Image 1 (cartoon, one colour):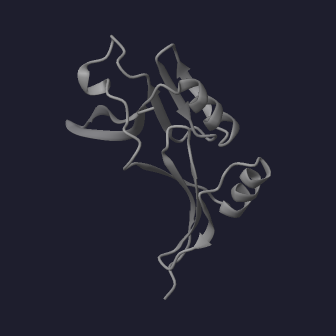
Image 2: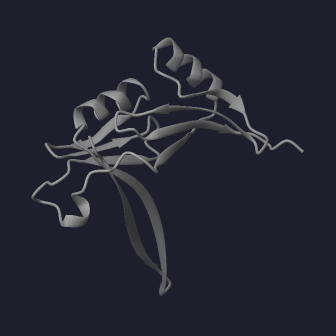
Length: 149
């Protein structure tokens, strides 16, 4: 099953003292047939919540609601061609930064989640491990630490 990555930028503009200030929020999106499996994985494995969903779109948020990710069914008639092709299964990953990577690692191991890269420390400062979502997207779960000197 092929899926597709879609990156959404939300631009919010406000006026203050005749100057334009803008904020930008990034929402990564994946075009996939696997909305049900994806919702189950992100809620049950990673503790995400559902911000919005309908029959062709699913918007999910991290447990603390600081970030979102969206999933869209391919070839939906409401979408223009650039948002219809499914992701081809290679060349994408997500990074989820957490405060206690060892705790998350133990929780996922206890749920029998398949670990693709076992927990380890990297010389550049990451302590991390990786899993894969139902769409074939690698998810690097990391706590950043000070690099070795």
